[in-house]
Amino acid sequence: MKGYAPGWQIRCVKCGFTVDASQGGVIRIGGIGKDYTLGKCERCGKWRMLAIERSGSEASPMERRKLIAILVLFPWLLTAGIVVIVTGAMKASGAYQLAMERIQNNPQAIERLGQPIQSRMFVGGSIRNGSADISIRVYGPKGAGRCRVCGEKNHEKWKLSLLTLVFEKNGEMIDLLNESASPSGAAP
Ligand SMILES: [Zn+2]
Image (cartoon, rainbow, N blue to C red):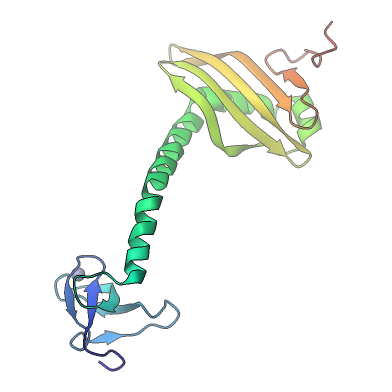
């Protein structure tokens, strides 16, 4: 194995099996970087990504930095994972879908936000025990706004008790449950 002095090892990133760099029959792949190679792991018996690193128990400064980065990132990744799961569950909920349907078909919302009206990635609030109180940020080509949605689920059917849309531009609020409602401040 040319290019690697003794004292280097090749480690299977999948199972952790380690061999001396001079023994491992490896093929370097360009573009991936000098720390990795593709090779057949003796333990897995499969082609794996192999890390090329200095032998010995002490992690190189680079590896230590990676480890620290992972430890720092982990709680954030965990939180992000939970948020993604919770958001996914909320977006799958009938309350969310009902609200989005109303928003997307509301003439005032269409006029002010443009079409198509889409929701931002994250949903705020909570849905539990058949009761929803969520906030959805929506946007279209012409503007953005924030919706508040409250509803209850009865016999597997959601009924919204509140659905408002506040336009980001001027803070004006419209009531989407009452289609004929005039904008706030100009109450009948
Ligand atoms: Zn392996």
